[in-house]
Image (cartoon, rainbow, N blue to C red; front, top):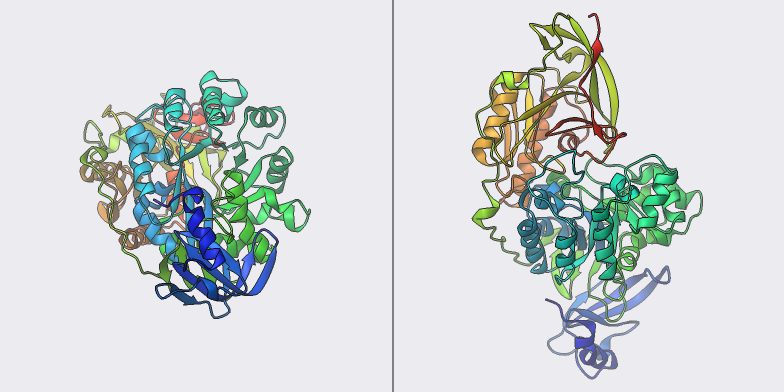
Length: 600
């Protein structure tokens, strides 16, 4: 654990004055100063006790016989990148493996919300990830999950947390605030529990994370802001981020594996000229394949620059702005004395190749590879074997019965929107055979099921979904099903759907795809049914095989698995599925799958 600035003050002063040698000196860099917005050439950086001690034109006075000297060779030195809002579990790997994957990409600070594991294991799961995060060589801070379950009355999670648990967590050393307040209908309705969670966080002088997933910027939006959430990452349009910033929130613009929300909103800065200090970049959800092959926050910064943002402004949005938002400007986000010594060396600010990474004053990555050993974190047995189906499922469990004597029906259909979290509320005319409503593969309407997996009740909720484009018999099942994390099964063939669901029951959770009775790909996720105990590179390869198998079955969506995993997220409009059935997330109430009879 890095010492506090106060504890290090005598050593930092002595190094700055030349009385004591530094632990490390990085020489001859172009200093990307995120406070002044300048790039200062010919700069040296002296580091001691994991913090910056001196940043100036010549650090000869800070070099001793034992000082590690790194020649910057005129490259740019910028602060280590910060991810302001993210869920480790979305990478299907542990916090440790996530850190191993992103350090070579220059991420040195992460603000994680472990509400995935919270929905399965409750407070013990949050504590596991909190303790794991505290032992890593980069800065991993935790936000206490706020909505477990995310929408009480519309779903049943594996655990339930409330104001008492939030108050307890605020005393933990690595908790920096409250995770995204997803139950925005509860907040605007004055729900006592939601407001108490916000109040407990504010009483601890910590940051309340927001999640207003509605297009309504009228009174409900104003009521939500009045309750205290300090940020929001659910904006998808220019109007969204403008409204948030004008009301004193910080707009978090996300580029995850499947969420592409930066381009539309960054125009608030590049075209409307809004103050960039109130915009923050984040990922929210990143697939392991994205982390290993494409990058993390460096990918987001590059993307923001490609949308017309000045490089230094984009860097500020991924460093200083994030630190200021969490009240940690004196700890993170800039290369200035006293802050944690997190540095990236790069030869180009636009393409942003990450050539050297220093975290907390320690060289951790060079030329895209780790140079430190980060051992696996041992998850206990009670964090595993969490998938309880209660019985073996058969094809008939996925039947949707039609009214007696009809040959066709009109049905509600969940419509997937590529690269966005919201869905559309669609309708389709579907045929009936032997009293059972049929899918329409030619019309891209297949079935979706939510299989209860926390208590072994054996219940299955069925509905229809469109947008995946599957054109052959297949089924994809996943125990990653935000946010209650039951099991989502999407398929064009009910026999395959049963095979996929039962397979995940056998292996203790994960993601699997079957086609015509044959298993095409499997990612085992034994930790809470959410995370693998394998290395990130192994999981990335398995996940890529899964995505390729989905393509072979006709799905051409970008990162379709991420879309699949959010179809049970009953706090984002318009239609979702939960363990109690189809949910209308514009009205926040259950709704019938079948609308009316229709001749087909």
